[in-house]
Image (cartoon, rainbow, N blue to C red; front, side):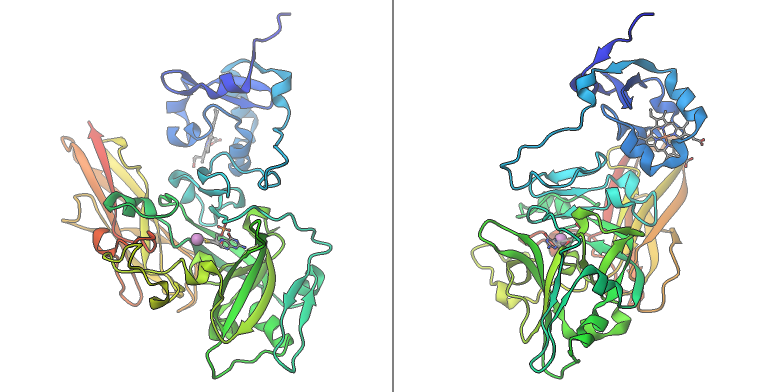
Amino acid sequence: QESPPLYTKEEVYSHRSPETGIWVTLGSEVFDVTEFVELHPGGPSKLMLAAGGPLEPFWALYAIHNQPHVYELLAQYKIGELKPEDSAPPTLETSDPYAHDPMRHPALKVNSQRPFNAEPPPELLTENYITPNPIFFTRNHLPVPNLDPDTYRLHIVGPPGGQSLSLSLCDLYMFPKHEVTVTLQCAGNRRSEMTQVKEVRGLEWRTGAISTARWAGARLCDVLAQAGHQLSEKEAHVCFEGLDSDPTGTAYGASIPLARAMDPEAEVLLAYEMNGQPLPRDHGFPVRVVVPGVVGARHVKWLGRVSVEPEESYSHWQRRDYKGFSPSVDWDTVDFDSAPSIQELPIQSAITEPRDGETIESGEVIVKGYAWSGGGRAVIRVDVSLDGGLTWHAADLDAEKQPPRKAWAWRLWQLQASVPAGQKELNIVCKAVDDSYNVQPDTVAPIWNLRGVLSNAWHRVHVHVTS
Ligand code: HEM
Ligand code: MTE
Ligand code: MO
C-alpha cells in the first residue's frame, strides 16, 4: 500500500483562497474542499473561516458536524496527511510576558496579539443568542495573569468600624448564587468607522466588540453588606482592582457608583461562571465583576481588591480614558477631568449579514444583526432600509424575556426582503430605538471623538446584486 502524501501546516495554510484551492485539516488528515465550499449547508462564508487550518475548533462550536454522514462527505476530499512533527502543539517563547497567555480560538479576528484583543467574525456573532465562550470578544490591556484557584483571595476592604474580608473561592460560593444574561460591549466597538472620518487613537474594532453570556456569581451588594458597607448619602464609588499588572506593578482598575453596587435590582455580580463554565482565563478567571447595562471597561477581570472610596478610581482607565468629547477637541486641548467617565452606554445596533462589499443574488435577501442599549433600556424596534434610508422596514426581533428596566442583553434581529431583478446594488442601513425612544445618530462625523468611543451611528453595508 502506498503511503499518503505528507504536507506541512504552512503548506495547508497557503491554501485558503479560491485561487490556491481551499484546504483544511481534521486530526492529521488533509482535505482539499475547494469544490465543496459553495455546497456547504452552513454557507460558504462560515466554511471559509476554517480555510487553511484545523476544523476541530469550529466543529466544537457546531456539533451538527459530529455525525457519520459529515465525516463520510469530508473523506471524499482527502488528499494526504500532516507531517508527524506538525501535529505537535505549538510552543511559546518564555521570556515574553505574554508567554503564559491562553490558547485562542482561530475564528477570532485579532486586532492586537500582545495584549490580546480580538472579536468574533460577524457571521458567527449573531449565530447564537448566547455567544459561545471561545469566540466571546476579548479586550485585554495587559498579559493574562495565571491565578491558582486554591490560593486565590479576593480582598474586600471594610468601612471604618466594619470588617475587611479575604474571600477564597469557596467563601464566595457560600453567598446566594445569582444568574443573569448580560451583553458586554467595549466603548470602542465600531471604532473603525470613526477612523474613516478622521484618525483616532485606539484599536480598530469593527462590529464585534460586543458579546452576550449567562453569568453566575455572588451579588456585589451581598458581599459589600457582609463587610459592613451601607448605602451612604455622601458621594461614594466602589473601586475594583485587577490582578493583571504592567512591569511597574500598575494594575488594571475601574469604579462604579456605590448606589449601583448596592442596588439589588442592578444585579452587579462578582461572577465566577460564564455560560455554566468556570470563567475562561481571558475573561477573568477565577472572578470578575459584571455590571449589567454598563460599559465593558468597568467589568474588571481577575478581580483582586474591592474598596469603597469617596472618589472614583484613580486608575488611568477610569480618569484618562473611556470618556467622550466634542469632535472639535484634540489631543492638545483635551481636558480629561472635564468629562464624566462612561458608565451606561447609548443605543447601538449593527448589521452582521450580509457583509459590506459582498455580492448577493436577486430574489431574496436576509439581513441579520444585533441591537442593544445601556442601563437596562430595552430595544423596542429595529428599522432596516435597503435604499440608504429612504424607506424603512421593521425587523423581526428575537430575545430572551427580560424584565422592564432590566433589559441587560441584546436582541438579535432579522429582516427578509425581496430584491427585484435588475437591481444593481443595495445600501442596507439599520438603526435601533430603545424604550426611552433614544435613537442612533445617522452619521459618524458629528459624534467623532479623539478616542473613538461611543461609535453608534446608523450602520451601513453596501452590497452588489447579480441576477
Ligand atoms: C452544516 C459540512 C465547515 C458551520 C453542515 C452540514 C454539513 C457540513 C454536511 C449539514 C449537516 C446536517 O444538516 O446534517 C461541513 C464540512 C466542512 C464544514 C465538510 C469543512 C470542510 C464548517 C465551518 C463552520 C460550519 C468551519 C463554522 C465556522 C456550519 C453550520 C451548519 C453547518 C452553522 C448548520 C447550518 C444550518 O443551520 O442548517 N456543515 N462543514 N461548517 N455547518 Fe458545516
Ligand atoms: N479587567 C482587567 N483586569 N483588565 C483589563 O484589561 N479590560 C476591560 C474589562 N475588564 C480589562 C478588564 C475592558 S476595556 C473591557 S471592554 C472588558 O473587560 C472586556 O471583557 P472581555 O475580554 O471578557 O470581553
Ligand atoms: Mo473596553
